[in-house]
Image (cartoon, rainbow, N blue to C red; front, side, top):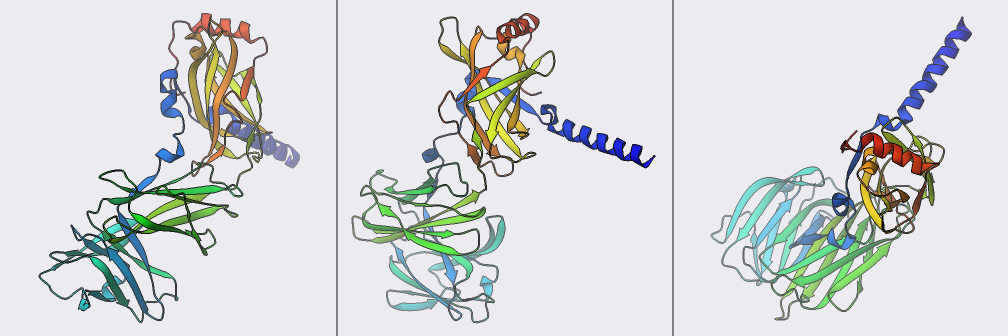
Length: 404
């Protein structure tokens, strides 16, 4: 009796495991050839962020923090303090040799309070707006003897904003943010009014907060045309934060500072796509395409995307449809589903292949693998011409579902 019960449990477990691995366990998406451009990953340089401000970390030493902040224009100038306990700090400002307490009532400083979300954390915000004042290099001093932070630990941020045209544009050079692979950080300094290089004597540095809590500071290479770049190789998975700080001088001689912040999610992956695929019939309407892959453990969930192409009547390669969905690695294969009705809507009969195949992490959407070339995966259908005609005849009047 016990053996029979154990056998039943074992068989049931295997059945559940097998069901979980079937393509039907997840939604399978598909779309027309006209949608392919929108489904492809954009060029990395088009996905950057533009910064018009400077976000300066407040890090106490012996309960005191001092910073010299260049202000090239006071047009709509604001200093914003973001800190959980910033209300208890003493803030002094020195400009033109005159020292003042920012919280003292003044006709030239308007103070307001609010709340700002930053990286999923809400900070109390204290905003100081300035009227009828001069630019230059301002010294800000903050004293907080009992701030509860270790020396050098970030206790908050001081954000400097104004209506200056000088801005930063920063982007990563890859979507494959995986351990052991180089990640390039690129930034461009420009004048929003003219798109010209923003000033002269510009320097740029990057502070990279590593996943283990430590920080690295590196100088960015000056390319001589207002662009700067550096590279780093993450060794462990986790979240990284890269802050770019640019200091420069405008053509008229004023100094300025800008920063940009980029959150980088790094994952472990050795996924590599193979060069050939095989297919099988799932039912009367669908084909299962098995993508060959190495470096993924059995049971690993990923998001797969591919474009189906084939030879048109002139023998030229033509797009048919895109397919995508969550899939689970099993024995070095990743199953994707192709609705046969997409094939019924095309004149293609031979030369079927997949293009622009990619794999992405299911949790963070980090790209894990690209094809080696645009036509990496050739589809080899056993007796496929017969199957294709069968699909066409059966579904020539039916429209495929975009989701099944």
